[in-house]
Length: 154
Image (cartoon, rainbow, N blue to C red):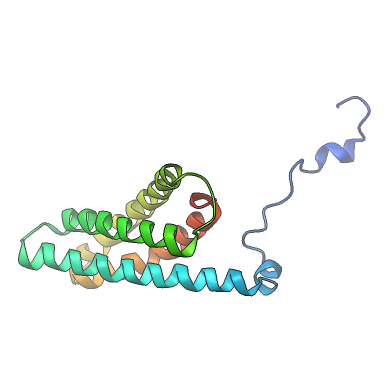
């Protein structure tokens, strides 16, 4: 026990509880927060389309293996999304572009790892590779959104 503190004080957390996922916080979000979410979704949709187009071209026109195509499509979509999010969704937020890019890459690589696992599993149970990629991207989006908003662009 720290001298001078009551035992119940020691049991309490020293930092405030994170509220990023609080229902109350979502209900009371201001208009600017909702607009930011909408912009993030639009950027994500553009990245989704870019990813699928690049993936399709690599597989069907250039004969790339589906996992290699997924990685290349991811990199192209990552660049698209980083630039648009940095310039439009989070223009005045956070640290230097280099720090944000590094953090955004960490978040995106985590998303890619989950994406590749889902993609591999779906393809191995007989799902068409393009449909499997679309499903994998949609499944990973909530994770990458939460990490991007709460960490990468802070």
